[in-house]
Image (tube, rainbow, N blue to C red; front, side, top):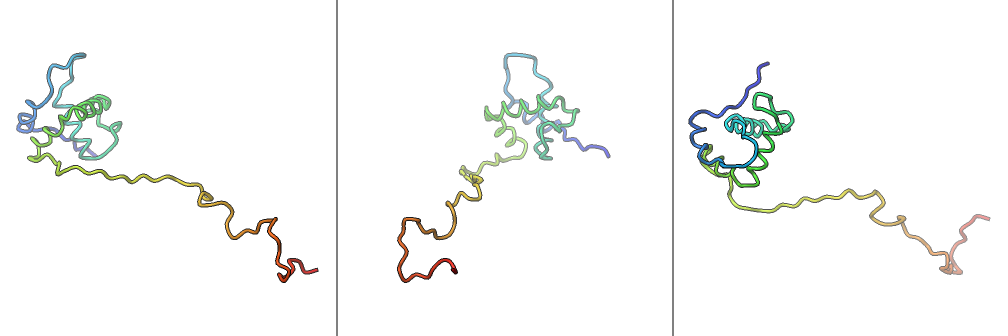
Length: 130
């Protein structure tokens, strides 16, 4: 079964190329078009970065570029250029924190308990069947 890879067209590349950061110090940057095509492909299919097809290059490069540009806010402009809208409608915060609790954490021993120092009523029935 042949894999269906996602590659940016010439028109898409022409739209986003001017938006990419330039002048980064360090090692020479690998082909941006190949890496961005890999990022778009991975976001489309929703797989782990580790499962990125080797045609896009090392998965660590794909992930590191995505993460670094996410921190810099580059993707908002890129996605807006590719789709026509930024995808941001507003901001909200949702918290769904849940904590696993031990089965007996709701309380100590269940049921009513009688304290040993509590005096028994004189008319109470005997507890044993002598």
